[in-house]
Length: 73
Image 1 (tube, rainbow, N blue to C red):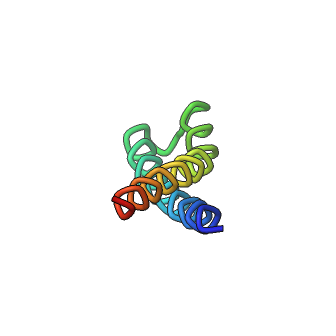
Image 2 (image 1 turned 60 degrees about the vertical axis):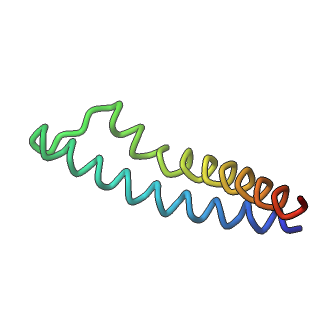
């Protein structure tokens, strides 16, 4: 149950980080290209937060497992 809660927290944290990072990157690319984003950057902007959410869940579980392992010693 604890792992599920940590994974959900990691998903939300990853989504938040993904939206912030993708917004910064998209603004930079749009400013450099005069307001036009190519197909590649559109895909990155669309799928970036989802990928960051999955990565956030994985990282949160890994960190929680390391913390729990160190508490047991």
